[in-house]
Length: 634
Image (cartoon, rainbow, N blue to C red; front, side, top):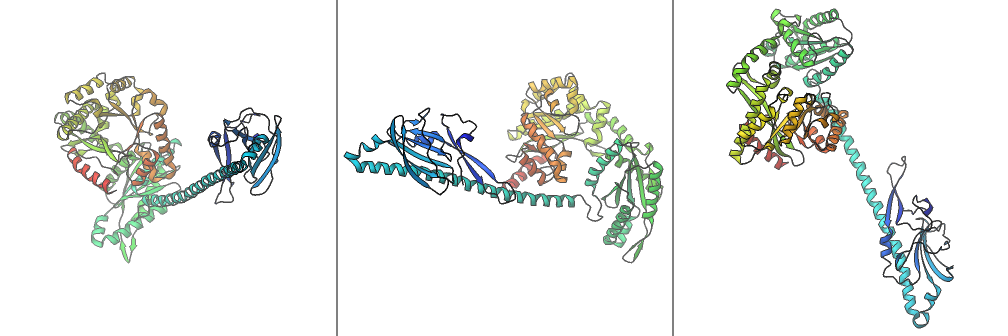
């Protein structure tokens, strides 16, 4: 029930001055009685109430609204709010009862006044009407009935005002209670969704056949374990395990026996793990183990020998005795690699060495097994011919506006159609290009290919979406880079708003690179900061470069589906970017859950396998039709 507080409790209270708003406190009912109740403050404009009295004949009289102590909140006459009028004696307010009506006389400024009042003790306020005696009795002789009607109307007006106040406040209270009920229902729905999300995340991290981690979860967990081991100056060991003769067993005895064998192998591996060690099934008959803790190389070799013997022991599966053995490759961090990817590649190379040496063997990685060095040499030798023969091609990944769910542009991703190695992805040749300096020529070739494709789309369709191109800090540091980019755009007759350049955090530390960025920005080319959240740059560094967009790295997006607790990192990044007037792009969106979270968090643009994989330009029209049909059905 709404209550009008005492006048003296108002922080803005000044004696002899009216209040310009009536504050009513409305209690909010709570379903949980153990929690403290809440109050809602509703302020009514006194000017609005005074306006209702403009057509009421009060003469020299006035209307008052009083609190529970009889102190005046408002006084109004026919002209409006009374400010600084004579002091009015306090009305004796009833302390209890639903509605109390009374009348009395008083002397004010030498005149006798008759006043009537209506009090609602439960609501803490009184409405009184006062008028001089001479005005009341003057018309009685010529028109007693007329005066009686006027008094009745005035009384009804008072009742009407009280009724309107109560009805308005009660309606507000009902609305607030409905909102509270809706909030409680939404909270229950959120809790159910979080429970289902945790269950699905757990299911998505486990290989259902072996009960071990799957590849994706293993790499995510192992990466942090290797980093922690390095901080503590301890060794991390990756073991890559492949079963000998598994294909023969699977083909001759059937997939059921093959699955039982994989489960038995997984069980034996799991029983040998120590505290903190993890294992996973990468697929087929390939298993990996990461050993952590305080082990020496001798301890590691002893453990590998024991594992080899343990996995080589006979297996009894549904009455059939099987004999198999493992080939194990071993890589140790930090000697063989700093990251989990490097350790996996080295352990894989060592495993193939063990297979060549015979069954049931384990081998440690050494540099003579580093096939990647040989491959890098061949790639380096082929760069010149590749640029000359136009072997580099672009695949385009759609970028989707989350508000309208429309494709607004593409990111151009370079591929190398190598005559010997086939289609190579950037992780195979970009490091070689940066190491050898070919990245400058390669970068301009990518810009040229992107401009050529934009021009082709314009000629065929009349319009074209913007295309984003990744540029290396080495390119940006070249003195003529800005001029070369603008010249390429001019050669194809394109405006600068159709090309977007994506930079990395290291570009913000190079003086010439920053100069190139300002030159490009001044020309109208939009800039994006790529892979934000994986390096050392923070929001303070963004003030040094004129970027338009912030691209959140896929590693942070990936955590949305793996751990709900990490999602506030993405949400906070989006909020801070918005305050800096930056558009936010999410990379690596692979699930609907990630898409929904990003849309709710206010992300502007998203790209990833869930929305569209990178594809050749000739497949874009078909993709656009399919995407439009799916959105229309949604």
